[in-house]
Length: 236
Image (cartoon, rainbow, N blue to C red; front, side, top):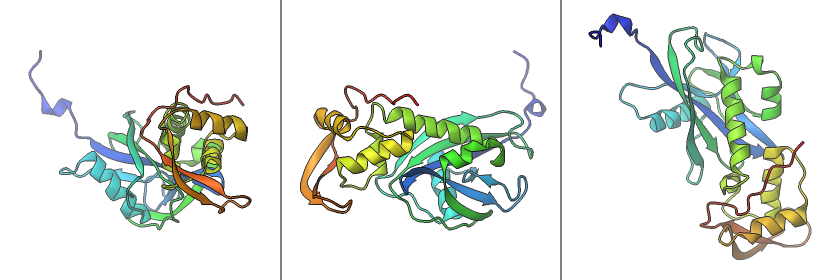
């Protein structure tokens, strides 16, 4: 092994990028910020930024979310690391490795731009992914990976309930699946599948009429983390 040569390893930075997804107006939406500084000034991007030298990755993700949008990590929100992106040319400033995170939460409030973000908004993922070149850096790829992670995991896990309030109806849960997958589902078959796995949904004993019509039974997420059998995504 050759001796260690520091000059052979130029400095590089680590960033966090956030794929923040929620369901608004019956559509799967992602949080986007318009960059206020170069590079890609004026272009839409995912929220994120550089990790400080004394900072944990999770803490950096929460800080960037608050600084750039005014949103704070909420109790009950789902947060997981998505993937690491390290193409040498992904950032024109220097060699930058990004650790992307996926955040899912129910109907988050309107974001407020801050930090180096000129503005922030919720945008339907279909709009953002329709023209991937409109997003800065490699954020179209990161967003596509985050959306696919969410779409695939709700087939077999309880992840879809992360888009719901603490108490929800089967109909509200079905609309989450429909928004994430972009398809219409048969209400009877859906009800049978999500209530057929013991512990997947737990009745709260209450009802609601917030969706109109007759009172609907309220549920909360149970302890079962897996949906068995899985609910396979319909082909479109």
